[in-house]
Amino acid sequence: MRVVIAEDSVLLRAGIQRLLADEGIETVAAVEDGESLLGVIAEHRPDLAIVDVRMPPTFTDEGLRAALRARELTPDLPVLVLSQYVEERYAVELVSAGAGGVGYLLKERVADVAEFVDAVRRVARGGTVFDQEVISQLMARGRRNPIDALTPREREVLGLMAQGLSNTAIARSLTVSDGAVEKHVGNIFAKLGLEPSQEEHRRVRAVLAYLERR
Image: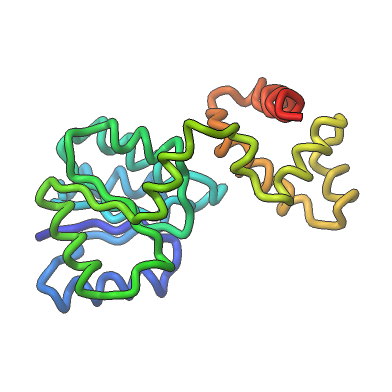
């Protein structure tokens, strides 16, 4: 079996490669961002892509969006998402993008090497493997407002956005860096399902969603 790995953590990337190698699974490419993932998939045509969700440059949902794009270009490509987060909207799209060969595991809940390797092989064969927590969140997704998925800090940032504050003003108000605010804003857009192509309107739409929830 030949796999590609997209993971921004050097240590984790190397660890996965070593673990797979011990099981006779070849890693033909290991990259740290979504754009590179698309390139190595086109070059190597692997049997499986193992993908993290949050990678450079914004650390929001680049990995999942790249996986979705990869499935568009190579519809039969099996994808195993291995992440710390459940990005619900994109997880649903990933499942809907093909007839099988998809998995979503949470890093912190992968406690057994044999189970992980079994998941890798099952997804590569066209099966599906989902962490129970992922299933629970996806089932609850349709029953709650997207605002509920925001962390307390993200809701605080969104509340200040609703007051008309710029990112710099929000950073000053919360006594954090501009970069921290930009990351929170990116997470807010991702969780509310506001696509990057809607840049001109995303801030307004996020505020409207916040006001409607109150």
